[in-house]
Image (cartoon, rainbow, N blue to C red; front, side):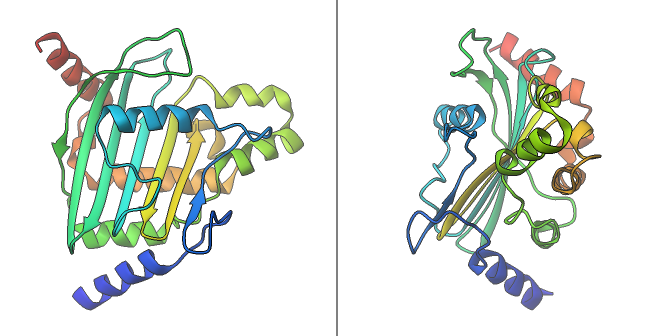
Length: 233
């Protein structure tokens, strides 16, 4: 089992599915809207990374880092979540960040008013997590703004563009020594039934939730817990 695990690590770190290389040695892939403007989600996540004092993945890291951001629609809640999984110096670490987002009239900025860092471990071991990374091809899932939005424009019509905004946005950051990828998928409860890319993203997120006990707690209780801590800070 240890040999298989090492092979999977090597495969995941050395295989490179990214396109749009910045130079010969490093691949940098982020989503753009059609007019080459950075997506709002990308801009806001960079602000959250700074406020949470996380390592910046954009220039790559020495081994492997994956972040899974759960950005819930502002109309329903200002509660967001992050799961960070890193492999470095032959050691896995997992962190869960619940956070409260302060309301702001400027949609181009975000401010975290309260957050916690909680160490987490998968229920069935890190080898299962690594197998999941490979099974769901998280390094090769296409950028949402380069695929799904274009399909909506061409196949379904502009009226369904509204399904992208105002709901939950799921965001993945992946960094290795040779690449950085950032991609986002909105409202999977709607798009997973239409596009296979979104379906695979939904399956991966369900896999992650099943592996970490923090998600055994109901959403409302996770939200209530961080809000209570914010009240008594």
